[in-house]
Length: 123
Image 1 (cartoon, rainbow, N blue to C red):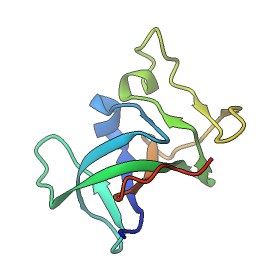
Image 2 (spheres, rainbow, N blue to C red; image 1 turned 90 degrees about the vertical axis):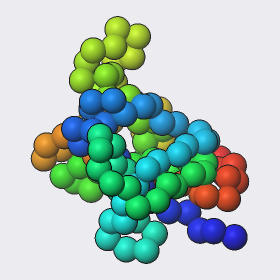
Image 3 (cartoon, rainbow, N blue to C red; image 1 turned 30 degrees about the vertical axis):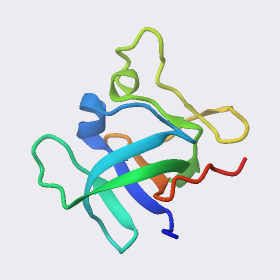
Image 4 (cartoon, rainbow, N blue to C red; image 1 turned 135 degrees about the vertical axis):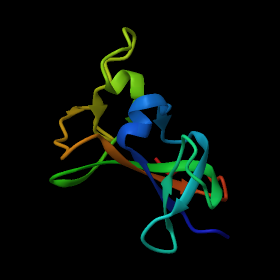
């Protein structure tokens, strides 16, 4: 049975046209190998991908200056930029739903933990 993998999403590509992601979602990411056997980086906009990761989201993290923070969802790029009147793009802590403030060195960065076997996350 495949082990979960980490897909790094964010940067200008997510701000441009990245979609919202929630725990339990089925996802598909075009990726390139990042640092390690179970770590990948999402690619878009003509970058040559090395493979596609498919599965169910089991964990989400915002990655800022102070480290990783577990979040309930990642807003889409439009919301993160403040251009969606229906979604303010704020982050909420996993389990509590409290607002989370994350300081980034540049553009927002996130980690999406994907279970390729498609198992439902434990709550």
